[in-house]
Length: 410
Image (tube, rainbow, N blue to C red):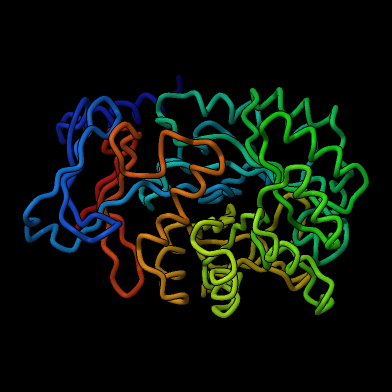
């Protein structure tokens, strides 16, 4: 165990002792479903009781309590990438992302490995599998998302994924990765139109791996067949597309029109226009949408120009967009998932309950994380307390599996 991890464990222990929450505890706030005052009690890492109370203290009168957020697509954060971008992934780097996410209200996330070298995949999946089991992460790493390398090689649809690593599905290669991950790959995102994709989808479905369609130019027939074979989600719908597409024959309509298909959307204010989000929300509803961040290693860094692992220049603009100038496309997000809560409420008019459902309950259900995603007795005590002013979420406290892991200085 490294010195940093020993210190982290000690700090978590001290914080738990000081708050009285190491074995049991409670939080009070406005219940996210109906905005009534409640006290949520927990013991041994699980919620035991939800008590309706008459009123909150003046300090907590505007504080909401909700289940922790679940992000199914995290490429990196704070200068750290889950694939190498000039620096190797380390256990300390994974710890930094986890604790930074706790500060932003994300209590569960999927490290996402984008298109890259097979050797890097093997090394980093093994390291992530070890981190997943580490008690300092408190179960916040639920599993992994492999986005690529089995995607479209075409410019635009490929996005910022490096062309030299894009390839056709290879089941033997994938099983090496699956073994290295200790069977923890929960989602694979691929293009349905490439050779071998359909058989690959069927095999993933047999293993219980969720298949997402993304960075593709699949036809309506190909998308329908992929869904028939087990594809369940359109990865960051509206992105991973060429800037110019046919107005009739493009991947958007068949994925939107098939009621079996869930969609993930990036609500950072850059990836989708307000009217796109409104159409997606009206079409799929709160039951079939998952909010995701697609946050990259540039998240949490100052604006400027950065070089990725294959020598491409990326720009983090002062407004917070991550741009790949060579193809005039976005390259991931710089905002954590919590930023999407207020934005989708603002542009669609949905209430807080719907926003939290899309950012916590829906991903928990889709990926079989039956112990989290809701505030109910028996669920993990993954709780966030926050204010919501002018559609901006400010996290006040985060509890993960019954441990207070973050408290703001307010």
